[in-house]
Length: 482
Image (tube, rainbow, N blue to C red; front, side, top):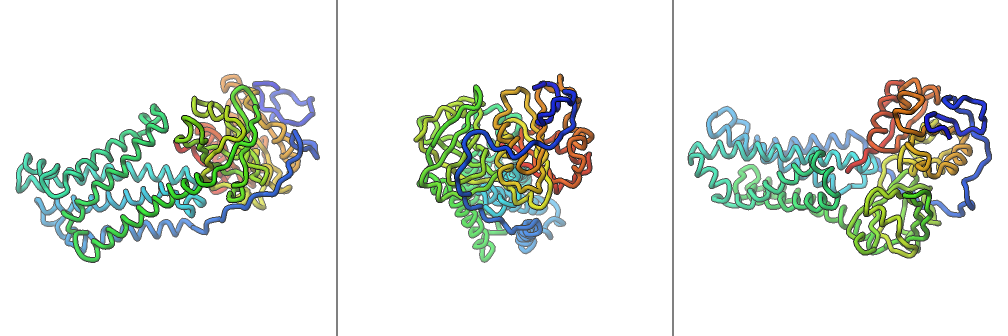
């Protein structure tokens, strides 16, 4: 294979090596190896949630916070000037910080309706944005509270009262510091330097900080200190807490009580394997092609680590297959698991399934381990999908499952293009430029595109598709969320 060209998988060798012309694959081919004999697993239920539902909840929450503040005289105090004005600002920023934090906790509980509609990546991105917003609001709340109190007490006494002199302010101070530490450690420039598990357990202290900050709202906050507002505020915290425990750790506990086991491990190249997981408890699993699971092998030094891997086949009764590349010590250890090893399988996750690609032609773009979900999606596409598959790799040995992809694309009257080599050596300057994409798929504007791969590939492919005139609603992808 020419490592600098965009090539078709057609057996026609008369085309020049830099040709971007794609011709239909011969059929009827079949994936390499013995044919699969299986029944498809049940598909997860689809959420009926629409964006207007989410917007309505957000507006209602904002009105609730502002309403409590206005009802207790907060808005009127803004025009009184002096300490009253600063107190009013401290109260509204405190309420807003708590409400934002609650929303962030709800998202990290991974509610199914939201995850199926928007994807786990967006939930975590929104969670991070809400967390950073809460940290800013907490900082403003502390600053305005200090200015308000110093009018009567002076700066030193005000500082003393806010850090432990007044009721519940000592725990609130500790909680605030924990939240700020977690926020700083979550900045991309910092968290990418940390092991995921280190960052995760540090991040968990934010829950403690949030809880420690709660009680001073009841003892000092007049907005939620009495009556129905107090009951409502406590009820919101309790409801979100229960949702977090059930949605986050309840699902994990359920998966731990019904572990699967490694059936076989097949090497694909020097650092990549195809691992099939199944067993009697597979009957409790529902999933669809294009989705991913979080795996926790019940093996020494691995049981406490969570690793997301995409399915590389359509999930069936013969097992779940994951294509795993050794990209670190932990993932390398997973590639060496022996058959019979039990694995806690949490999921499925992933908002983009074949149901998103019904009655439409498809462009599938894959890079790196993104080949895995593309392979699984091809197994479920109908014959009228006529998929155009574009695979980007730096080296030939990264093209795992290529024979299977060719055969499955042929079954759906599709075409496969492979682009291999370092970017500087490619025959085309930008393989995802609009003209290049239109060359391999002239009817691109009538297709839905699904992108699977690293962040740079997603950004480049999305930019090229938008420049080619493909609507944003027809471009599907999930970002890496760590």
